[in-house]
Image 1 (cartoon, helix red, strand yellow):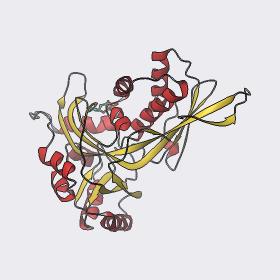
Image 2 (tube, protein in one colour; image 1 turned 45 degrees about the vertical axis):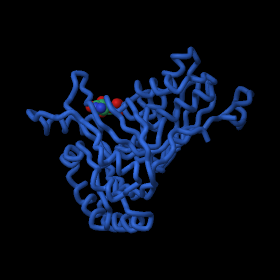
Image 3 (tube, helix red, strand yellow; image 1 turned 60 degrees about the vertical axis):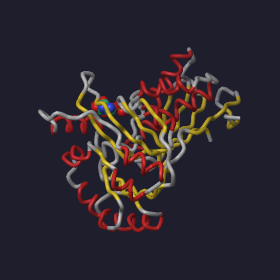
Image 4 (cartoon, protein in one colour; image 1 turned 30 degrees about the vertical axis):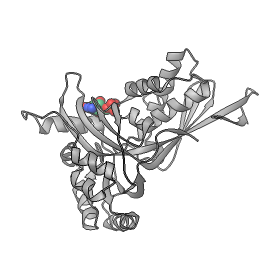
Length: 312
Ligand code: C5P
Protein backbone atom coordinates (compact mmCIF):
# COMPACT_ATOMS: atom_id res chain seq x y z
CA UNK A 1 0.00 0.00 0.00
CA UNK A 2 1.18 3.50 -0.82
CA UNK A 3 -0.43 5.18 2.17
CA UNK A 4 -0.44 4.53 5.86
CA UNK A 5 -2.78 5.81 8.55
CA UNK A 6 -1.42 8.49 10.85
CA UNK A 7 -2.99 10.87 13.35
CA UNK A 8 -6.49 12.30 13.20
CA UNK A 9 -7.18 15.81 11.93
CA UNK A 10 -9.18 18.47 13.75
CA UNK A 11 -12.10 17.49 11.55
CA UNK A 12 -12.23 14.18 13.35
CA UNK A 13 -11.60 12.07 10.27
CA UNK A 14 -8.81 9.58 9.79
CA UNK A 15 -6.15 10.88 7.48
CA UNK A 16 -3.46 9.41 5.30
CA UNK A 17 0.08 10.60 4.84
CA UNK A 18 2.26 9.84 1.86
CA UNK A 19 6.01 10.42 1.93
CA UNK A 20 8.17 10.51 -1.19
CA UNK A 21 11.96 10.53 -1.16
CA UNK A 22 13.71 12.33 -4.03
CA UNK A 23 17.43 12.47 -4.85
CA UNK A 24 19.74 15.38 -5.70
CA UNK A 25 21.65 15.37 -8.97
CA UNK A 26 25.01 16.27 -10.36
CA UNK A 27 25.55 17.12 -14.02
CA UNK A 28 28.52 15.13 -15.27
CA UNK A 29 28.20 16.94 -18.58
CA UNK A 30 26.36 20.20 -19.14
CA UNK A 31 26.76 21.36 -22.74
CA UNK A 32 24.95 24.65 -23.33
CA UNK A 33 23.86 25.98 -26.73
CA UNK A 34 22.93 29.51 -27.74
CA UNK A 35 19.97 31.28 -26.13
CA UNK A 36 16.70 30.36 -27.90
CA UNK A 37 13.97 32.87 -28.78
CA UNK A 38 12.10 31.76 -25.61
CA UNK A 39 15.16 32.65 -23.50
CA UNK A 40 15.95 29.03 -22.65
CA UNK A 41 19.08 27.28 -23.89
CA UNK A 42 19.28 23.99 -25.72
CA UNK A 43 21.27 21.60 -23.60
CA UNK A 44 22.97 18.25 -23.68
CA UNK A 45 22.67 17.53 -20.01
CA UNK A 46 23.97 14.29 -18.51
CA UNK A 47 22.37 13.88 -15.11
CA UNK A 48 23.47 11.50 -12.38
CA UNK A 49 21.23 11.18 -9.32
CA UNK A 50 23.17 11.03 -6.05
CA UNK A 51 22.27 9.88 -2.56
CA UNK A 52 21.30 13.15 -0.91
CA UNK A 53 17.53 13.30 -0.52
CA UNK A 54 14.63 15.57 0.25
CA UNK A 55 11.47 13.96 1.62
CA UNK A 56 8.07 15.42 0.80
CA UNK A 57 5.19 14.34 3.05
CA UNK A 58 1.63 15.21 2.10
CA UNK A 59 -1.43 15.08 4.36
CA UNK A 60 -4.99 16.29 3.74
CA UNK A 61 -5.63 19.87 4.90
CA UNK A 62 -8.29 22.54 4.49
CA UNK A 63 -6.11 24.48 2.08
CA UNK A 64 -2.68 24.30 0.46
CA UNK A 65 0.01 24.81 3.07
CA UNK A 66 3.81 24.25 2.95
CA UNK A 67 6.23 23.76 5.79
CA UNK A 68 9.92 22.95 5.63
CA UNK A 69 12.48 21.58 8.07
CA UNK A 70 16.22 21.16 7.80
CA UNK A 71 19.40 23.21 8.19
CA UNK A 72 18.57 25.49 5.21
CA UNK A 73 14.79 25.57 5.76
CA UNK A 74 14.75 29.35 6.24
CA UNK A 75 15.98 29.80 2.64
CA UNK A 76 13.08 27.85 1.10
CA UNK A 77 10.18 29.96 -0.20
CA UNK A 78 6.90 28.81 1.36
CA UNK A 79 4.64 30.61 -1.13
CA UNK A 80 3.18 29.65 -4.52
CA UNK A 81 6.64 29.92 -6.16
CA UNK A 82 7.71 26.73 -4.37
CA UNK A 83 7.84 23.96 -6.98
CA UNK A 84 6.13 21.55 -4.57
CA UNK A 85 3.13 23.90 -4.34
CA UNK A 86 3.08 24.38 -8.10
CA UNK A 87 3.16 20.61 -8.64
CA UNK A 88 0.23 20.02 -6.29
CA UNK A 89 -1.79 22.85 -7.88
CA UNK A 90 -1.15 21.60 -11.42
CA UNK A 91 -2.13 18.00 -10.61
CA UNK A 92 -5.27 19.26 -8.82
CA UNK A 93 -6.17 21.46 -11.78
CA UNK A 94 -5.77 18.65 -14.32
CA UNK A 95 -7.93 16.21 -12.30
CA UNK A 96 -10.45 18.65 -10.83
CA UNK A 97 -9.33 17.85 -7.27
CA UNK A 98 -9.43 20.38 -4.41
CA UNK A 99 -5.76 21.15 -3.67
CA UNK A 100 -6.31 20.96 0.10
CA UNK A 101 -3.02 19.49 1.16
CA UNK A 102 -0.26 20.11 3.65
CA UNK A 103 3.13 19.70 1.97
CA UNK A 104 5.97 19.14 4.41
CA UNK A 105 9.50 19.17 3.04
CA UNK A 106 12.32 17.59 5.03
CA UNK A 107 15.16 19.29 3.21
CA UNK A 108 18.62 17.76 3.01
CA UNK A 109 19.57 18.88 -0.53
CA UNK A 110 21.49 22.19 -0.53
CA UNK A 111 19.24 25.15 -1.39
CA UNK A 112 20.08 27.20 -4.52
CA UNK A 113 23.07 24.93 -4.97
CA UNK A 114 22.78 23.60 -8.52
CA UNK A 115 21.74 20.16 -7.22
CA UNK A 116 18.08 20.35 -8.26
CA UNK A 117 16.71 20.60 -4.71
CA UNK A 118 13.71 22.66 -5.78
CA UNK A 119 13.08 20.28 -8.67
CA UNK A 120 13.24 17.33 -6.27
CA UNK A 121 10.52 18.91 -4.13
CA UNK A 122 8.35 19.44 -7.23
CA UNK A 123 8.69 15.83 -8.37
CA UNK A 124 8.19 14.57 -4.81
CA UNK A 125 5.04 16.60 -4.20
CA UNK A 126 3.63 15.48 -7.55
CA UNK A 127 4.14 11.77 -6.86
CA UNK A 128 2.91 12.11 -3.27
CA UNK A 129 -0.28 14.00 -4.20
CA UNK A 130 -0.96 11.51 -6.99
CA UNK A 131 -0.89 8.73 -4.39
CA UNK A 132 -2.82 10.72 -1.75
CA UNK A 133 -5.59 11.77 -4.14
CA UNK A 134 -5.69 8.49 -6.07
CA UNK A 135 -5.44 10.38 -9.35
CA UNK A 136 -3.31 7.58 -10.87
CA UNK A 137 -1.69 9.79 -13.49
CA UNK A 138 0.29 7.82 -16.07
CA UNK A 139 4.07 8.03 -16.10
CA UNK A 140 3.84 10.12 -19.30
CA UNK A 141 1.44 12.59 -17.69
CA UNK A 142 3.60 12.89 -14.56
CA UNK A 143 6.63 13.58 -16.76
CA UNK A 144 4.62 16.13 -18.74
CA UNK A 145 3.67 18.00 -15.56
CA UNK A 146 7.30 17.82 -14.39
CA UNK A 147 8.52 19.35 -17.66
CA UNK A 148 6.02 22.18 -17.22
CA UNK A 149 7.37 22.88 -13.72
CA UNK A 150 11.03 23.15 -14.71
CA UNK A 151 13.77 21.80 -16.92
CA UNK A 152 15.31 19.53 -14.26
CA UNK A 153 12.09 18.24 -12.68
CA UNK A 154 11.53 15.23 -15.00
CA UNK A 155 14.97 13.91 -14.07
CA UNK A 156 14.18 14.21 -10.35
CA UNK A 157 11.23 11.87 -10.95
CA UNK A 158 13.23 9.37 -12.99
CA UNK A 159 16.60 9.34 -11.16
CA UNK A 160 19.45 7.00 -12.06
CA UNK A 161 21.34 8.54 -14.95
CA UNK A 162 19.92 10.17 -18.04
CA UNK A 163 20.76 12.39 -20.98
CA UNK A 164 18.44 15.40 -21.12
CA UNK A 165 18.08 17.35 -24.35
CA UNK A 166 15.89 20.30 -25.33
CA UNK A 167 15.74 22.44 -22.17
CA UNK A 168 17.04 19.30 -20.45
CA UNK A 169 13.56 17.89 -19.96
CA UNK A 170 13.54 15.29 -22.78
CA UNK A 171 15.20 12.30 -21.18
CA UNK A 172 16.95 9.19 -22.36
CA UNK A 173 17.89 6.76 -19.61
CA UNK A 174 21.58 5.84 -19.47
CA UNK A 175 23.31 2.67 -18.37
CA UNK A 176 25.73 3.01 -15.46
CA UNK A 177 28.25 0.23 -14.86
CA UNK A 178 29.27 0.98 -11.27
CA UNK A 179 28.73 3.21 -8.26
CA UNK A 180 30.62 6.50 -8.46
CA UNK A 181 31.87 8.22 -5.29
CA UNK A 182 31.30 11.95 -4.93
CA UNK A 183 32.07 14.74 -2.53
CA UNK A 184 30.06 17.97 -2.63
CA UNK A 185 31.23 21.26 -1.19
CA UNK A 186 28.35 23.58 -0.28
CA UNK A 187 29.22 27.26 -0.69
CA UNK A 188 28.63 30.07 1.78
CA UNK A 189 25.89 31.57 -0.40
CA UNK A 190 23.63 30.53 -3.29
CA UNK A 191 23.63 31.40 -6.99
CA UNK A 192 20.52 32.06 -9.07
CA UNK A 193 20.22 29.74 -12.09
CA UNK A 194 18.76 32.46 -14.38
CA UNK A 195 21.61 34.79 -13.35
CA UNK A 196 24.21 32.16 -14.28
CA UNK A 197 22.60 31.60 -17.69
CA UNK A 198 22.52 35.40 -18.22
CA UNK A 199 26.22 35.56 -17.37
CA UNK A 200 26.83 32.71 -19.84
CA UNK A 201 25.05 34.78 -22.53
CA UNK A 202 27.02 37.89 -21.61
CA UNK A 203 30.37 36.08 -21.74
CA UNK A 204 29.50 34.51 -25.10
CA UNK A 205 28.18 37.63 -26.80
CA UNK A 206 29.25 37.64 -30.44
CA UNK A 207 30.55 34.06 -30.17
CA UNK A 208 29.06 31.35 -32.39
CA UNK A 209 28.08 28.60 -29.97
CA UNK A 210 27.99 25.07 -31.40
CA UNK A 211 25.01 22.71 -30.97
CA UNK A 212 25.29 21.01 -27.58
CA UNK A 213 26.04 17.29 -27.93
CA UNK A 214 26.66 14.54 -25.40
CA UNK A 215 30.23 13.28 -25.24
CA UNK A 216 30.51 9.66 -26.37
CA UNK A 217 33.59 9.17 -24.14
CA UNK A 218 31.51 10.28 -21.18
CA UNK A 219 28.59 7.98 -21.98
CA UNK A 220 31.04 5.07 -22.44
CA UNK A 221 32.75 5.87 -19.12
CA UNK A 222 29.39 5.85 -17.32
CA UNK A 223 28.36 2.58 -18.97
CA UNK A 224 31.68 0.94 -18.07
CA UNK A 225 31.70 2.33 -14.55
CA UNK A 226 35.20 3.70 -15.17
CA UNK A 227 35.77 6.60 -12.75
CA UNK A 228 39.11 7.61 -14.30
CA UNK A 229 37.60 7.84 -17.77
CA UNK A 230 34.55 9.67 -16.40
CA UNK A 231 36.87 12.17 -14.68
CA UNK A 232 38.60 12.90 -18.00
CA UNK A 233 35.26 13.43 -19.77
CA UNK A 234 33.25 15.57 -17.32
CA UNK A 235 32.50 19.15 -18.42
CA UNK A 236 30.25 22.04 -17.51
CA UNK A 237 29.76 24.94 -19.93
CA UNK A 238 28.19 26.98 -17.12
CA UNK A 239 31.33 26.74 -14.98
CA UNK A 240 33.05 29.91 -16.38
CA UNK A 241 29.83 31.87 -15.77
CA UNK A 242 29.45 30.51 -12.22
CA UNK A 243 33.13 31.32 -11.49
CA UNK A 244 32.70 34.79 -12.93
CA UNK A 245 29.83 35.48 -10.50
CA UNK A 246 31.52 33.63 -7.63
CA UNK A 247 35.34 33.73 -8.13
CA UNK A 248 36.11 32.14 -4.74
CA UNK A 249 34.77 28.83 -6.04
CA UNK A 250 38.12 28.41 -7.82
CA UNK A 251 39.75 27.98 -4.38
CA UNK A 252 37.29 25.23 -3.46
CA UNK A 253 37.94 23.43 -6.76
CA UNK A 254 41.70 23.67 -6.20
CA UNK A 255 41.41 22.35 -2.62
CA UNK A 256 39.55 19.24 -3.82
CA UNK A 257 41.93 18.64 -6.73
CA UNK A 258 44.95 18.95 -4.44
CA UNK A 259 43.39 16.39 -2.09
CA UNK A 260 43.30 13.77 -4.85
CA UNK A 261 39.89 14.18 -6.46
CA UNK A 262 39.87 12.65 -9.95
CA UNK A 263 37.76 15.54 -11.19
CA UNK A 264 36.52 18.82 -9.74
CA UNK A 265 33.70 20.81 -11.29
CA UNK A 266 30.85 23.17 -10.54
CA UNK A 267 27.57 21.24 -10.18
CA UNK A 268 25.05 22.55 -12.73
CA UNK A 269 24.65 26.31 -12.32
CA UNK A 270 26.50 26.13 -8.99
CA UNK A 271 27.67 27.20 -6.54
CA UNK A 272 27.96 23.66 -5.16
CA UNK A 273 31.21 22.10 -6.35
CA UNK A 274 31.42 18.37 -7.11
CA UNK A 275 34.45 16.10 -6.72
CA UNK A 276 34.66 12.64 -8.24
CA UNK A 277 36.74 10.27 -6.12
CA UNK A 278 38.33 6.92 -7.01
CA UNK A 279 36.61 5.10 -4.14
CA UNK A 280 34.85 5.67 -0.81
CA UNK A 281 38.12 6.00 1.10
CA UNK A 282 39.49 8.62 -1.27
CA UNK A 283 36.15 10.46 -1.05
CA UNK A 284 36.55 10.69 2.75
CA UNK A 285 40.08 12.09 2.32
CA UNK A 286 38.87 14.70 -0.18
CA UNK A 287 36.04 15.62 2.19
CA UNK A 288 38.44 16.04 5.13
CA UNK A 289 40.72 18.28 3.05
CA UNK A 290 37.81 20.39 1.85
CA UNK A 291 36.57 20.85 5.43
CA UNK A 292 40.06 21.85 6.56
CA UNK A 293 40.47 24.26 3.62
CA UNK A 294 37.88 26.68 4.96
CA UNK A 295 36.71 27.35 1.39
CA UNK A 296 33.13 26.13 1.84
CA UNK A 297 30.28 25.99 4.34
CA UNK A 298 29.55 22.25 4.44
CA UNK A 299 30.89 19.08 2.85
CA UNK A 300 28.82 16.03 1.94
CA UNK A 301 30.01 12.59 0.85
CA UNK A 302 27.70 10.38 -1.18
CA UNK A 303 27.48 8.21 -4.29
CA UNK A 304 25.40 7.63 -7.37
CA UNK A 305 23.43 6.60 -9.28
CA UNK A 306 20.53 6.88 -6.81
CA UNK A 307 16.92 5.89 -7.52
CA UNK A 308 14.39 8.54 -8.59
CA UNK A 309 11.36 9.74 -6.64
CA UNK A 310 10.05 6.84 -4.55
CA UNK A 311 7.10 6.48 -2.18
CA UNK A 312 8.52 5.34 1.18
O1 C5P B 1 13.44 25.39 -16.21
P1 C5P B 1 13.88 26.06 -14.96
O2 C5P B 1 12.77 26.84 -14.30
O3 C5P B 1 14.60 25.18 -14.02
O4 C5P B 1 14.94 27.13 -15.43
C1 C5P B 1 15.35 28.16 -14.57
C2 C5P B 1 16.03 29.21 -15.41
O5 C5P B 1 17.26 28.69 -15.92
C3 C5P B 1 15.27 29.66 -16.63
O6 C5P B 1 14.41 30.71 -16.32
C4 C5P B 1 16.37 30.11 -17.55
O7 C5P B 1 16.83 31.38 -17.19
C5 C5P B 1 17.47 29.13 -17.24
N1 C5P B 1 17.50 27.97 -18.15
C6 C5P B 1 17.91 28.14 -19.46
N2 C5P B 1 17.95 27.07 -20.31
C7 C5P B 1 17.62 25.84 -19.85
C8 C5P B 1 17.21 25.64 -18.51
C9 C5P B 1 17.17 26.73 -17.68
O8 C5P B 1 18.23 29.25 -19.88
N3 C5P B 1 17.67 24.82 -20.68
